[in-house]
Amino acid sequence: NATEWLTVRDFETSEECVAEVRKLGYQLWVTDLSQEAEPLDMNPTSTSSNNALVIPEKVALVMGTEAVGASQYILQQADKRVYLPLRGFADSLNLSVATALIIHHLFVMDPSLIGAMSEEER
Image 1 (tube, one colour):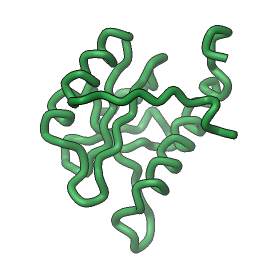
Image 2 (image 1 turned 90 degrees about the vertical axis):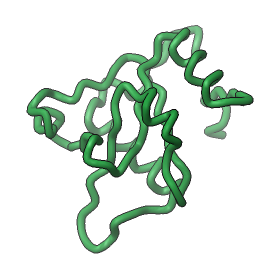
Image 3 (image 1 turned 120 degrees about the horizontal axis):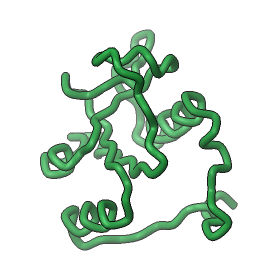
Image 4 (image 1 turned 180 degrees about the vertical axis):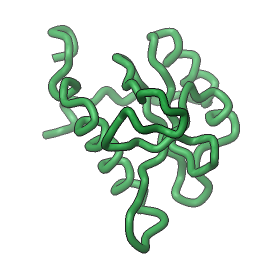
């Protein structure tokens, strides 16, 4: 069961969540379709800023809602705004599909992430 590898925490507010993420040393990456977002490219050296997109050791990935995306507060708190480039005729994906593809994409970009858990996390 995949849920045994997840830690799910509930927060009353986005502010509480961001504070905890920061306290634990995570970078906050938020999915976004604006011009400020960087593509999660298969070739991590070809980003819009011509700098390598480095996946941090600790990253908290925030997916917005299907209807409106992430809140303005979360977007303002983001260390990085990212999007998954789509090919073909689709310009958006179902939230669960987008989440799965983005997580898979991160593993493809940096295979060293596969199984990268401390003994305590295991």
